[in-house]
Length: 312
Ligand code: MEV
Image (cartoon, rainbow, N blue to C red):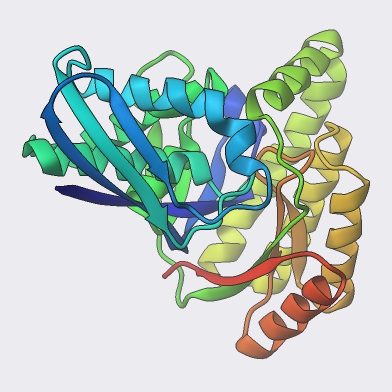
């Protein structure tokens, strides 16, 4: 029996902008997806998906998941005409849009196949296999989700639009910082949202260029603020990033309401994270006390939330 796991992730800066080759910053979170794989003689595969989920997530993603699993199996050289895979997914990462659930399952599956077949693949190869799997979920992923999910920690990522290797730098922070992630309960389709943003960009390039310039300043300052552990500033910049995500139409009324609740409870910053138009927000809440206050405000308002830390 081969085993593997992949971290969930949260994007602190740069979802959507990362697709156009701009730098972004993501962090792995403590929760992860686990996979077990048993390979025997036979054909095809059987999947038991025991991952916890926000209602409806797995059903909505089922067709994409089938393509994703096949992509990974093919990429790893397993012939489904001659081999049968029993795959079980589990772990404590609650599947929802915005926490890197698809990437975490791709990484976990690639690691479990690697383990079962003793392929000896390193993290870079696992990341490549997971990227193939991510294509099943969103056509042309930037690769930031599988990278954070594979390597863990805080990751500065720039997609290479020419097709060469992406830039990936692990960032160290002086000490881990508490965060709260909260779910809108709405499952978004990443391909659809990314394609819609691209359409808007193509229809109005001057408008989009202006937003991109603002984003570049946000990201540049955010890196410096994180280096200096100026968390007040990091939070303000997350709020600015949220404003830009509102402009490119990936926030919605519910997400804006959640962001407001979190900020009112004292979060230094709160923003949409990941695809948007559903999924999650993330909130910067240094210190256990502030984290608990923001967590309670969101859960009391009916939004499921998780406490986590970045930079661990
Ligand atoms: C999804 O978690 C992040 C997006 O930027 C898409 C991508 O990077 O592939 C929306």
